[in-house]
Image (tube, rainbow, N blue to C red; front, side, top):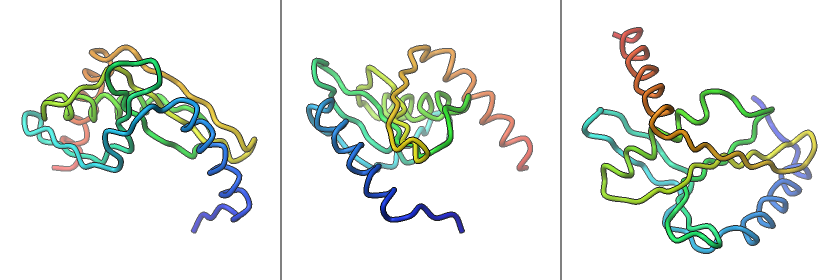
Length: 132
């Protein structure tokens, strides 16, 4: 199994805590299952939080990966749609990527909500087709 040495985990946690303290005003929820009954899917969203200076919440997914991948905004779009369907609010979608190689943090915002959700639905349809 893949493991990250304890000293690197501690460093990344410290970097994340610093980012969180400097950017997040308040947490709406963390690690919550969100469900779309309309499109029949569910997933666990990492964090919904109001960022400093914002009036409504941002959906934040925390990743420990080697880069930003093209599927990341699709996952966030699916979570966003499920939250909206449940009556919640989401004004922004962010990936917070912890870089274990550089012991740093990068944030990327995705703003093309409709485009990304349409791509998510296409991926969901393909997944269902291949898993029948």
